[in-house]
View 1 (spheres, one colour):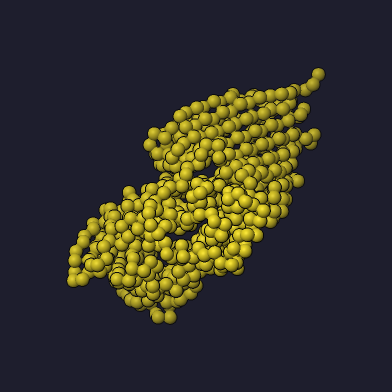
View 2 (cartoon, rainbow, N blue to C red):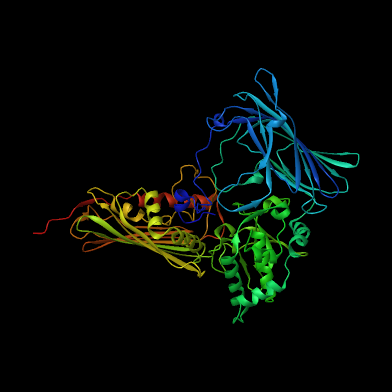
Length: 635
């Protein structure tokens, strides 16, 4: 779900992503721009009774265009060196005239996979890098990779999902899955020409797929993967069965050791109320346990013991969840581990597979609330926006596991952006700004505050002004409140003096954007206000929220507006938007307020049509010009 705060520091200083989860989509790519095509693909998968897999994949990839930068014909193949082994054979470059140039054994390298992004990662993911010889446009890269599991993630069970990339042309792709007859699979397949047969002691599933005409890049921020060609298979027939099978791997880790009990007692000293104790434990884990992605061995699936996380003071989502649950258990507060996905998917698949879930949070049944410690900046009782209204699986040994996290309630998610500006005698404009937020937006704003404290108020302000293309400014600074106390509301203030104002300037637009940390009123909760890559009939994310802006400019005796814009009032079934302009002497004020009230996480059908029409009017209101003219001369 879209975060409300602009990617200020990540864009300029590479300090960690504050970018929107509902990003601006690039325009669709024409098929002619795609650099490769899948000429042939064969995947032969054999599953043993213990759940271990051997997969033999033969690929023939035609290079349609050699990239202007980077090595041509260098193909990395990732794998987890602890859980599986990979062998590359039969690799060669097939020239357009039919000649085959083999890959030398020394040209197949093994190396550690490079880190992705800026989040710290401890991983044993390695790469086999195939360096194909003499690669030109029109050539085909052919190779076979054989993967062998060293152990099954969930002993005796098998799960798999495949969703072909429709932006790639594919002439002939075939998948064959062989499982013991004793292993019953639940299968969901669409447009993959599925066939099932029995061969000896095996049940054999086959799928065939071709995509002769590549499709443009999807424009909708909300994927509907199960409407596209795919297959999903699982030896676990339901999400309840999946939870029950996974439970021993995680729940057995929730142990109240001597170290856990000591830490829980110290954190909750003087607190008797269970909610106060739970909040204190949540705050401590959020502030003291650093998030680090762990992909060592089975660490991508199985959490560490709580003592391990306590000792190291870092861990991934599973490690933090298990530690938090163990600390709660030490104070006799019930807790359940919860599997959730961070992608914008809001329904369960027809068949459970592990790849649906890449995150873990905690459910506190006695307090009737979920908790996610990994963000590190959210108040107790506040879920990150990406966790709201999501299908989740509670990790339980028996009983019902399928649930949904609550949608954002009206009034929980708010932002207020206030500007007070004064034209100075030298016609420069002094701007004082305050931004405050509640709910998930407060968590995002607190992250900005942490960066302010790390970089310094002047450097951070300079980065923001540069991002908004403000030049000739002076005295830019930000004042961030302390970030240690995870309160439901957070605020940042700041100030800057701009260059000389000029006649004809669209003054309110310029002043409001100088130190802007939040999106404009109306941008985000019911879909993006401006995004040419998203079509009017595309589904978008939506949620209840309120955004308020109050701008006041004292023109003193230097300028005036050529005209005071008209007010605007808009109300639909789900949206309210108001703009009010006023003038008091030399001071001109504008108040804007947007409020959405929806009970579903996706705007589609009539709700999307309602949002599109409303956003067009709001967009027009923001385009109103407020031009500066010379002030009337005093008699």
